[in-house]
Image (cartoon, rainbow, N blue to C red; front, side, top):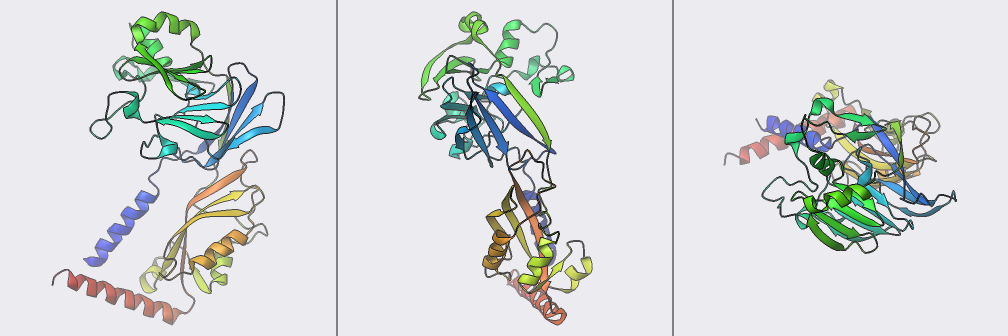
Length: 367
């Protein structure tokens, strides 16, 4: 019974580890300022849609050298107006309504950056009267009752919603332009149908007015950001590439720490021997070198030498030929590697000790 419980817990842990939304592709976004004098390029390091791993470079159109770089990716979600660059190239605004986490500063609903530094942020609650703790809130105006999903379409990697017959132009505009950028001012239509204007320079709220009263004027200034979207097939995210010399990192790591590598599908080994594992989260750069984000699992006092594994990983050089050339880095985020003692007798004794410990723990549950 106890072992069944442990298996259930492990299964749940694995499910949680892979629960974040991933995609088979990643998007590199090149987006221009309204005056076309500047542009930004976002380069993701992984294909997790909630992730900020990556970099964003800002350029002057007449110069190939980046003016500055932000150490994060702004995930392109098929809505080009949710990412904006000011006419002087210094301010970047981001509406993160789909993958927001208002408890984390760089994942809040509305973000303003000046020359790469975050200067202002807003939660969904600050943008309207909805409280995420008690209700499901929308950051931007939305009206599902007027939409016809059968007629949704994508044009140049931008999402164009379909509408039911008879929907007014006013309502269509409210959904299609619930946010846009004009004259270095961010316009945002919230769920209360209030037009909120924010200064791109300071991030401060300038005004909040009624949508219906402003509709005619908004039509004259609304715009869609000019951008180019490059779709790239996402490399594997759960397995480390081969080493630059063609060897297996996992095999060489096992040799380095004096243990035997175990195939995760080897049921016999799992049944007879004590199995240890490490979960690797790291970023590999174009030159094959690695920065370790974290090591989880049976490390640092739980059977595996975490410091040695980290050092070996940092010193390794990987073959990046399978990583698309457009990507400057790639993140491995959940690479499970399994080991056991290189001695069969030791591995069996460790397994027996594990089973006895489980029995003792089970007895305590009924005392």
